[in-house]
Length: 338
Ligand SMILES: Nc1ncnc2c1ncn2[C@@H]1O[C@H](COP(=O)(O)OP(=O)(O)OP(=O)(O)O)[C@@H](O)[C@H]1O
Figure 1 (spheres, helix red, strand yellow):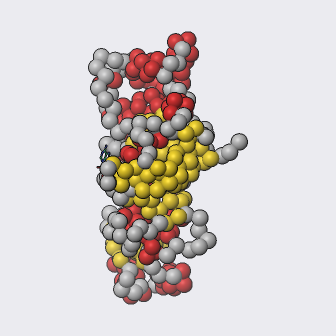
Figure 2: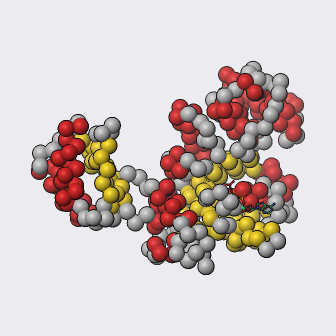
Figure 3: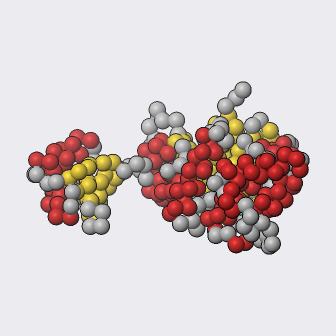
């Protein structure tokens, strides 16, 4: 059986003369978590609406587990669970009743529905909420019930619109754990978010869209590696007294292109630079031989925010990602627009 679960090929949507989606192509495998990002009006919702059978593409096609989103829309609805960014209003409904209601809408027989509701509550760590009224739940709790709802009919693909939006740090961690668990069980996830650092912690694939076009697609490492010419390093000092001497050495050794900032609250010096490993090795050596007490010299993982800014800068012009000149060996695609 093919490992490809989501297959999007030359997907195009025009509203009259306006092109909302322009030849978008990408594939996802079972268990992938795709971070689907783009500025407002980029075409994310349009893509999602096509995937869940709510909008017809003008050209191209999209398939979920081999089922065409237009000609096989009924099957696709069984294969996809979609959580929109708005929860809706469900007055006087307890969580259990709410899930039972949606289970019935998915034609899950009454006999199995109860067990299924228990299962989805368990997967989303929400069993304790089952007797609470939906509208009495906090936003974070409602988000979890929203995910539980999308899982009722055991879909292979989950599409989650801004699941971390408005969540406090603790709720975000829980949400992250739930999403990673769902993917590890073999579901494919498409997650939109404007909270890029959060997204970069869970997604293994990233697609950046702007003006209806796919600007970059690949693993997080590939996309950030291609779009960010500079890397970020942090020099962790043992205490605040070490900050000034370490910063002085960094300023002395690095060229003007380096962006150097000192964080007194974190006791670290941060350097954003395009310097080679040789230059960085010399810097590290200088810091150590100066006797400064540093505990770590570390590279910060791929910066999705910077990649996003680069990919969507001058949206619609040729200058975007083509200026980056991706290495031929990389499998990520970075597309220029004309
Ligand atoms: N029914 C429609 N008729 C005309 N234009 C539309 C229609 N639906 C969407 N559009 C346009 O298509 C473009 C893409 O919209 P879409 O909603 O897909 O963007 P998005 O990436 O989801 O944005 P956001 O992050 O703001 O939700 C926008 O310019 C939007 O105005």
